[in-house]
Length: 243
View 1: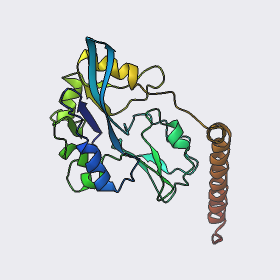
View 2: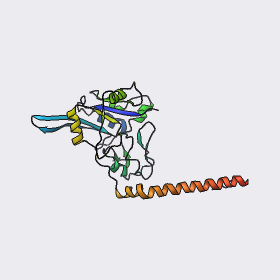
View 3: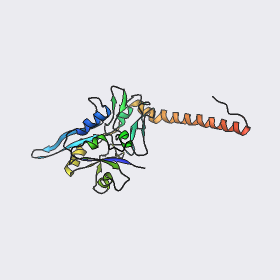
View 4: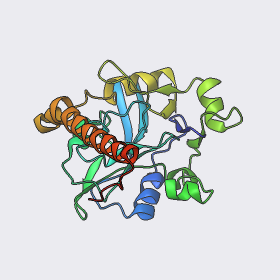
């Protein structure tokens, strides 16, 4: 089973926003929102000792996504290949997952009132294509592939070239978008673009800590009771009763 990841080489990014435009075109992203975006020419230090970098961000498809547990409907879930998705049929637009994402990589689409975000262009992957942002990167700064495949570009850049994850004390949840860059760029990322602490709104906190366990326990008890009744009927030679 593939385990998808992306590597972004900040040394190559020219800040052209081609990735943002391609993504917006591919997925009809409304103006004012983005699935992937570029913060251009961020600088730190004082003249003449200044450093700068363009910053490219999107959903990180984390190993331990903080956005899944607060969702009261199960709309946010993770595939075995690591892609974190949103089932728009189940999404009620409550925004709990938006607050819980420490990378601010989610938004509520004003046209659908549903949560939206990058899904690594899963539909394109199923057709054997690369994500739209990768194929349109003019600086050849984005790389995508299987982190479990030693022959893949991302494997080599992570395990051989030392691409790093954007984590800090606020959030260390295993983001699967990695970065290459100079030590100065790494310092800029730590200072300006490190993840914030995940926020849980009070209703989401209540759902996570109190209501969800109760609901799951009740569902489990209901199914267990039905199963016991069903097998008791079979043991007695009775026909199961349809609800």
